[in-house]
Image (cartoon, rainbow, N blue to C red; front, side):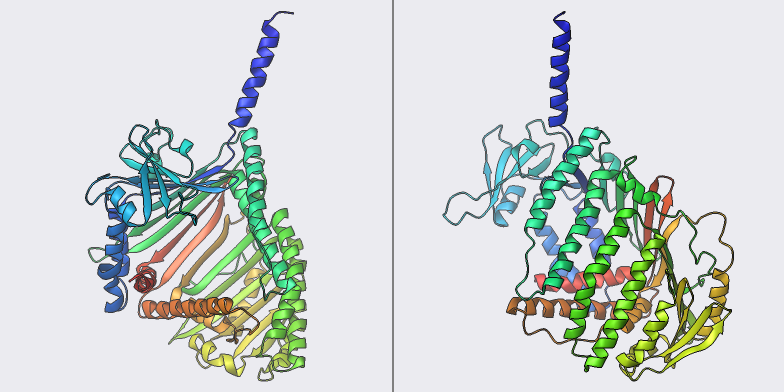
Length: 594
């Protein structure tokens, strides 16, 4: 046998081993921002939209000085790049444009001033270790970062190999730079591009498995936590990691971006976010995308109002993973719901709690049975009826809509102030309509949207549940039901989700649905009580800012997600009034930094 054949086999095996060792074992998410000047321009615009002088001044007194101190020594005209690497761990590589490296008001002095210790490694004069503080024994800090100053950038990474002496230009390099991403024109852009090679897919999957082990190992029962609550929290982590794994492993290409358009010359400003996603061929993620928009919505023919307050449709096809997730969630959430019902002090009697538990179990049964349909199919249309009044019509496709009748029958046992009229109206042969009175403690919130009204109508059929309220509610409900009964369009609408909402009206809807305030459980630790109090305080703070910022202006936002061949695309547009709210929240929380 010639020496060539064994030599060829040896070389082939060696090449395969090298290929396996160099397989793409991590997903690299690239985040780019055009520069500090662009960031300051956008933030200044947003904060100065704020509704009060006290909030407006936060730009000059807090945010601008903070950004200037952070950017000392940087070139504010050049892009910033941050890479997030998701493999066996989650790591970061950061690239900041440096205007002045050392001496005086420089980048290195600024890092030292912020509490970092920056020390040269003596390799060519451009490699440094970056640590924060010392360890408890007074020696060098553990887990230093490394910084390479090259190509006009300070490039940081948790390991030295990621910042080699021949580090490519992080922006302009033809292969590893981000010029094409910056050319999209976004104020912030996010991109992920994965290799489709089988070895690379397998390597990413193996790495994520190790990351999952680390994350799940950190999950433990809290001191005051019931075993059912822990089970639900554990399940939530597992299911989120399942979805994250598909994203990290199976993405072919993902692109997302945000643009703030500053108002000028009498034109209002606006904001827009966009994304597009393609999955690797024959991957689990591609199968989940293929499940979208395969059949027309049950509500495809229902007309949404041309000037809605809050409206939209969802026709979200479920793949097997999401079906399994829902089944397990409904199974696990039951005991947690019953526990929360027992703890709720607003239910004064055992009879109330028994009725609420029965109703919640019927609802979970309905939702669980509906998984078999393979789709989440629903719509909502809340629109103005003039003079501050509104009309609401909504509907959901379910496996057995008549189960909702049993929930309605239980409502008087939950709250005696509800006035219930069963089967008070019929729509055709299939639909029974019940009227449900608003309980006394909810009327004030309900009548912000529906002045003078105190009734919700619930219509049920064998495969749908509908709701209506407000001006001419029964009339519009009947019209929508008749529209839905028409033959489905031949062409399936590729939109999976689409909506338009007025932020001020959406806040009022949330106020109607918001649970009654509960006292904090005395079994919780002092720290847990403090966190709950702070969370509630922050939520109320944001709600008040939203009300204040959106008063008297057009606070519309809209968006859609649609299937486009083998891609999934989406966008959301927000009006200047919504940007005003974003600016107000930014300014308000900036006060905490003073």
